[in-house]
Length: 253
Ligand code: IPE
Ligand code: IPE
Ligand code: MG
Image 1 (cartoon, rainbow, N blue to C red):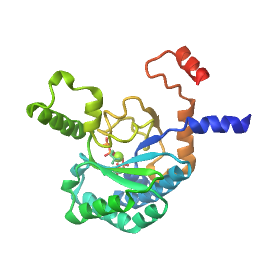
Image 2 (spheres, rainbow, N blue to C red):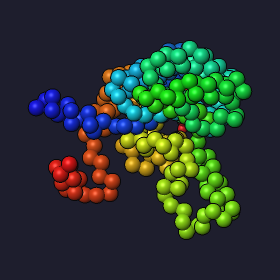
Image 3 (cartoon, helix red, strand yellow):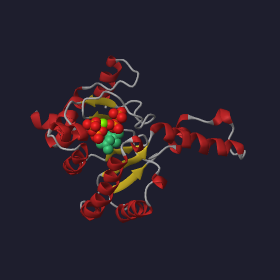
């Protein structure tokens, strides 16, 4: 019975987990270190969580690494973060590739240095045929910007006479956004205690289950990930239906 329950739970595991990795600065400050020291510690947590998701056969993990608003931080912190992205990619991409992980980036990469853009492209190409976990890194990403660009591309089709405004539908909008080929996140996690979405995947998170934890990102590990998944498994996803309808559908399947 226990084993059977395990199989059932596994089928209900989230296919796509999206995380706002927050609390690096506070983690460092608690240790009387400069805030920027929290970011390398955050990279270690990324490695633990990626390994966990690959082992657990999660399909997609999306990590918010740098928001379109994070340019407002002190210059020194921004430049430390850019250096850390580059160094981490140089060190880790081969290992990700060996582990059959596909790497993708969302966000406006044109504002990054040429070298960093080149490395992003190379690592996407190097891992594009991998069939295990898809790791999506949101870098210079903003949900408003994502939606704005989608609106612009649809407006161009209307202007060109290929589309009439009445024919614009939800799936067209979804397809004009980042990562249209991936399922929407089932589970959204934010570490660091804040309960906000900070301009992350606004459209795609419409029906995600939200898990907030006080844990600071550098303290995140396999156990805290499992806790988030266990919390997710207690939720009843109704998508607008009644609880009774959901139970009947489950019994019939
Ligand atoms: C998240 O941690 C990392 C990035 C935004 C790049 P923070 O740096 O926001 O950490 P806190 O929230 O200030 O503690
Ligand atoms: C959100 O964290 C962005 C990332 C984790 C990359 P922030 O720490 O920047 O969010 P706010 O500013 O507190 O909302
Ligand atoms: Mg923060």
